[in-house]
Image (cartoon, rainbow, N blue to C red; front, top):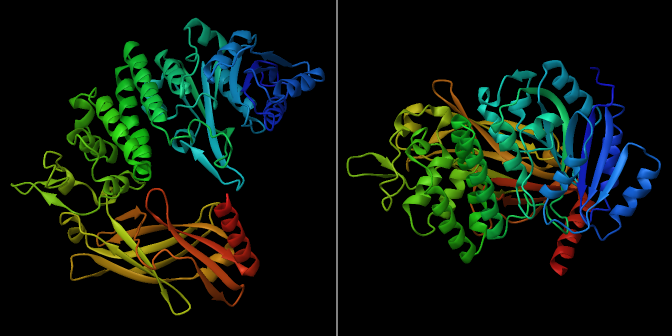
Length: 533
């Protein structure tokens, strides 16, 4: 069975996406003769999408267009419609606003046929638009080719809940009755993927890029995964995760079911907690109540394995308190990498605990935790100094563990967010302060950052300790009068550099840099335009 023979169907779904749907379909047709059919399912669009597809189909015999008479309200029903129409031995799914990179189908089909696998999966990249910055999705899973007799042999697969970066044997899906949830069911791919893994397929993994997920944060209509401001989104997410757990447990996949619960704590819970301080009081109250009800279904075994993992510790705090509390501290703990900020409380017998108010949330394993895995907290303060900026860092003690490890240096790295590998680094000594913290200072070379490119720069630190161990962390941006102000700094190369320090959603310090007078004017113009809306 050779990859150039037509063996794959690509199901493309869309609703009112005339601006992108033809690019998606062309990317599927452009995969070459391995694609025998492209089935475009239009979910009752009103913007002319179906007409565009019909015109494209006139010159492309491999393209079939199916129009749904009534909008389904979700992605599951149109995918099921397309799946029912497939005649090829293998099938893939593609959303109308994304694309398949060249060679994706050949790579997956070769892996599936070569390993006699019912499922083949490859690397998906999230491409931020308009910047073009790409972030790989679960890259550790796809670092090297692998063949798994069943998903339980690599439980990390539970973290890849996407349906679109995979090729499926059509007969396998039909034999097990695997379909997407119908109707308005957000996060339908979480449930579909759980149904796939519950059926214990043979799986082939490839390191190739097989899907490009376009992220448009400024779009008029946000995708489900980005539109997280309403409580209904969180309820839909928890419902999908609970359903996935039930699917796996009902199929006897107890290990995978347990891993699905752990994944919820480590990914979903942390993601929404990072954003919780940004929501209004009503949202936070509803979120907290719903999350407590959801986590009440967990059992003791879900909490005893690594109880100090950030997601588990956050979950324990939520369960222990009937009302929202400690949101800034929880946000820091949820950040990547996690930070456990002061105050550091102890119980009456001296055992570390979350706080004086919640002594039942114990941190018993913290004294023995290896230094590279400690949730260390570093504050960052940026102040003007002469014609530039001075960065001050402060590393907090953590129940005596920091002093025991002996911090020596901090490697300061400013990394360009949209240009992989572009960074400015320096190493500074950490010195003990009288208040039980360790401090370091360095100058921020704004002109050097500007020379490498305007845009956003993230601050990362590599802390080094006496025994040679290290810990990679971000730094919490301190706020206050004059700390996060936009400044125009003189530059020998550019004449002027506009620097805007700010705190990211997780609270970390970052910079926006605009080099030259034109860059400064452009930034100010964009800001005025936003303010006038």
